[in-house]
Length: 283
Image 1 (spheres, rainbow, N blue to C red):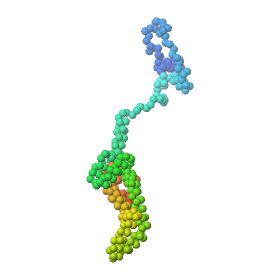
Image 2: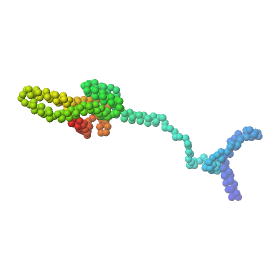
Image 3: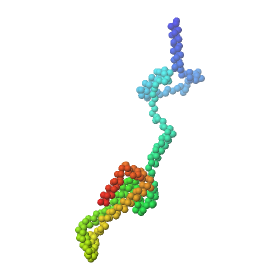
Image 4: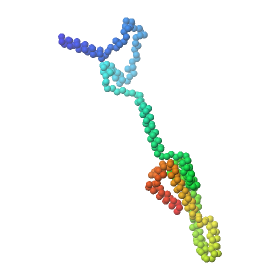
C-alpha cells in the first residue's frame, strides 16, 4: 500500500511539474465560440515549413531547442549571437571633441612659424638704400614666384646675380691676359720715362697710352671684378641683415642645422663657406 501511495504521489507530482513547465496553449485562447463548428475560412492555414530552407546546422539547433524543456529553453544557458549589423557609431560629442583636439594641434604647429604676408619685404626695404632695396625686392620676387623657402631663394638669387656678372668676369680675365702679354713693352716705356728729361717722359706717356689703346686695355682693367663684386657683396650683406630683423617669416625659412635664419649659425659653417667662396671668386 505504501509503495502504491508513493507511486501515485510521484505520478501526480510529475504530472503537475510537467503542466507547470509546459503550459497548455489552448487555455489561453478564447472559448467563446467553442460550441460553433469552425468554418473552413476560420481554420488556420498551415504555414510553409522553413526547416527545409535552413542549413543542417540550423535544423539541428532547432530540433535540440524543441527537445529541451520550456524552462531550459529560456534559462540562462550560455549561447552566442551573431549580428551582421555594423557597430554603433561614436556619439557626436566624442567626435567633436576629437576633431577640436586635432584642429588645436594643427593651429599650434602652424602658428609656431610666422607665415609670410604681402608687404613685409616692402616694409623692410622702405628705409634701405637703392641697391639694398633692389636686392630685397629681387629675393622677395624669387620667393613669391618659386614658392621656395627663404634659404633657397637667397641661394637662387645669388646664382642669378653671379650668372648675370659672368660677362664682366670674362672681360676681366681677358684684360688681365692682355696686360700680361704687353708687360715687357710697358716695362721698357717705364724705364725711358724715368729719365730726367721732361721730353722723354712726355714721349713715354704718349707711347703707353697708344699701347693700351692698341690692345684695348687699361691699367684699371684688373679691378673690374673687385669694383663690381665688392659693392654687390656689401649690398647682399645689408639686405639680408635687414630682412632678418624685419621679415618675421624668415624665422622658419632655414634647413638642416640652421632652420632659424634670424639666429647666428652655432657651428660657423655658413660664415666660413661664404668667406672661402668670396676669396676664391676674387682671386
